[in-house]
Length: 442
Image (cartoon, rainbow, N blue to C red; front, side):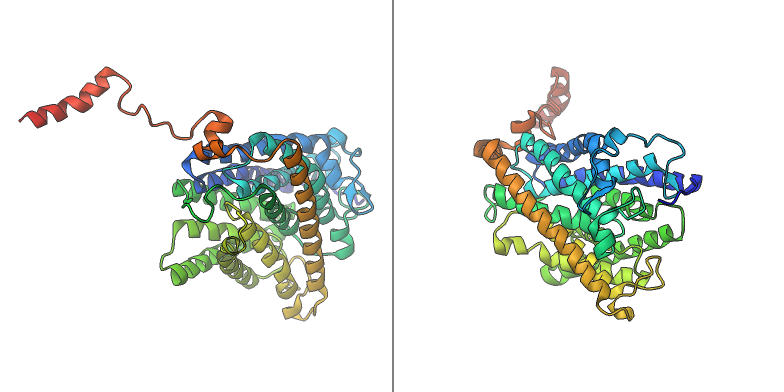
């Protein structure tokens, strides 16, 4: 490995970016929490927040080593090489131009949100205990290996890296395959095993708090600048290109989603705007350093339009992806990943030419193969994990608990306790009721 001198400016930028990416998980919690019914909001928040604890511990213990240790056959990093992050405290040990510990922290935030994304597919009905076990197992056997395939380059953190990054050479700047396609495929497998919510397709299941949804979408967009621009691993021109593409693609996606809603449904909704934001962020993630700003706008627009139509597929096929993880993250991730094969600009930091820039299909087939490998692996392994957990501990809460509300059943709490507003003391009753009686007696 090449030994590089640590740059304090790059280090500062990546530390800030790591904090921005970590903020995205609470943002996701608000985004998902607002989209469910009031009786499920706390459970939705808890699924994301506890993932921070579960994956955070696993990352320190073994996850970083599995993702960025010296490769075993291009499939997984040596799990013992950086066990408990051994050796990363050395101030002279650099990964690229930043301390190795800073890189480990940055990638930890990626691992956390990748797992948390899946939770939206099983809203309202998955046992909390089952989610905790699933999150731990999925991180270990699906995310950590997939991150190694995509993010571990030969000569980076180890002498040998993963097969997608080095043999297939598919481009994925910040996680379109390892995070979004991965989580989307897993969400599909998990919701197929657990089955639909009670009343799915018959009972309205509208979001209970669109203000929370918009807050979550705003935090996700804010944090995503760290997600994408931070993946340059330095305060440099690549970060600038990724930043501007993240802005342009997301803006175009939001507008594209709203136009689809207006033409199809007659209304442009706040839920559509928030969903369009997320779709654009997902779409540009793999391509942020490989396309021009024009290409970024095209990817964003196509991601927004495609995802706006894709979320209706579940109703036709009968699977209950509660919060459209498949329709947004799987579809959006595929759009962004595959369009690199068409729109990659040789003048971009990635320096690769797509089909429309004279590169032929060389990069396109690489993108298809990389995306397909992650999709198939994630779906099959997640399906097996879910089946085993369902047979052993059970994935789903009781029907009576689902009807009552998962917050009360699983956490003995409610998100909104309004039962005592205005009636906590005799004095308050007097101020509320006496004036009404006096007015009635006149």
